[in-house]
Length: 135
Image 1 (cartoon, rainbow, N blue to C red):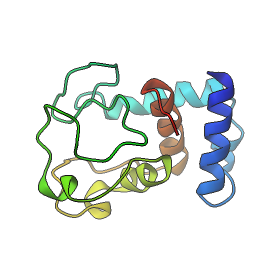
Image 2: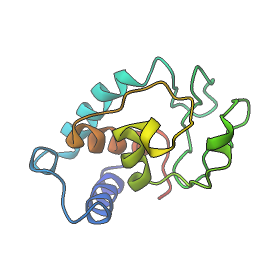
Image 3: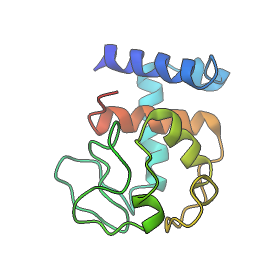
């Protein structure tokens, strides 16, 4: 998993404009994972991560990367999400996490967003590892 995280962080940094912000860039993989896990506290009341995990107010996120938005069986998505054509990647999840209502107007996710860029990057690193990202 260590090599995977290194590659994922590097790929995300390049796709997001060249480099991570200094605070995230200077973190070790272990520190990024710990920070991402802490940030996930904001998400866990609505989402689960484990394979076969249940949907809550939001869908289970296992296997989300590389898959289309709005297709997880057993969860009722808003029409705007189902019809969005979004395929989840680190890049568009980062944009979504800034403020979901602005990223995709009309979605029903009641979440203000994650303000700090370094927290979003740590969260995405954690989610990629915990949801078996294939990207």
